[in-house]
Image (cartoon, rainbow, N blue to C red; front, top):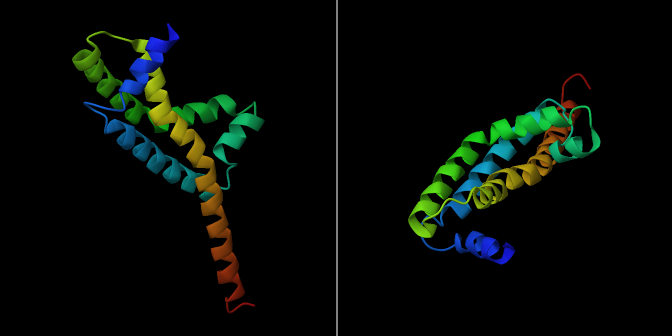
Length: 137
């Protein structure tokens, strides 16, 4: 069962609708940077680090991330359904779930924390420079 599964998943990278392998991760990364910026501005912990090390807030942070990429995931489900209908001529919900999660949620999950760290570093550095040159000092 696994070899045909992975063959069909990997076959999606070519042929009709292959552009989604660029579009969905790009949009997910854009959303991750946007939310990472919000995290940095509000001094929240990096996303994946908070999920892994804060069991009390884990469920809420995961829901927050899923809500952020929900539209991208719905778009992915629609595009994969069209692909399955046109190319495979069958409905494979497990393949659809794997493709949508890998293309939309995984990039978001991996990028939001580093984006927050970089933006936080920039904001701290900017604040330090403005304090250093303020007329009060």
